[in-house]
Each structure stands twice: as structure tokens, then as C-alpha cells.
Length: 140
Figure 1 (tube, rainbow, N blue to C red):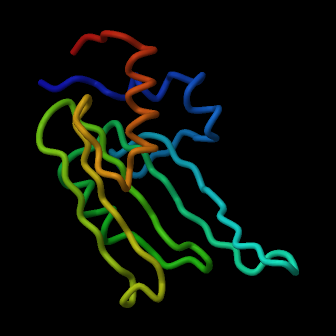
Figure 2: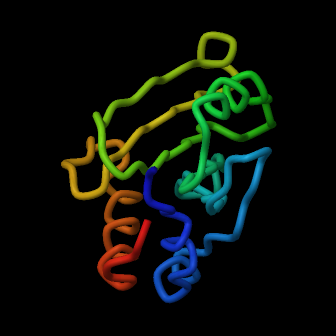
């Protein structure tokens, strides 16, 4: 029996500050945000693109495959990052491109609480660990 990590999503003082909202797809659930990046020059805005972040606290092994198949191209959406939080196990990453990167990228990061995150997801790992510190201990 594994821990129910979804209690971390209830730490509003961490998640609302960074504009995360509840999210669910099938049996996978967690938090979602869309971040806007603006490239500016002397004459103003040159380009704007988006990154979608999904912090997934509750999931089954089948959800990963289902989410991978369900990823769709959206205009100006550069990257979709799925950050799967697990109680223990190996932390690793799988990256995919949509049409050789011309239509964006999809990243699946698996993170074990308290482990050293990769540089790509230090921001999300920091928030998860901060929520874990605020919630404290929880039961299985």
C-alpha cells in the first residue's frame, strides 16, 4: 500500500501563490498551471509561448501511457511537463518531441520525495518539497 500523496495538493498556501489549479484526467489527478514566456526586443514583444505544468500526485501505471497518447499539439504551446510525484523509487525523465520538435515537446518526470531533482524540474520539486514540509507527516 502506498501513501496517498494527493494531500500535498491541499497545501493552498504553496500552490495558489504559483497559480496552480486542480486537475484530473482519468484516474490521474493533481495540479495544473500554464506559464507564459515573452521574448521582448527594442520594439516590444517579439514572441510569446507557453509551458503547461502538471504536478501529478495520484496515478496508476496505465495513466502514463494514456497521457502520452492523449497529448495534442496546441498553437504556441512549447512544452508540456508532467511531474509525477512518488513516495519512493527511481527518479527519471522521458522526453518526446511532437513532429521533430516543430510542434513542441512533452516531458514525463518521475520524482521521489526528498531525492535530488534534475535541473529541468528543480522549480516543481522545490514546490512539492515545500508543500510536503508544510503538510508534515501523513498516514498511508
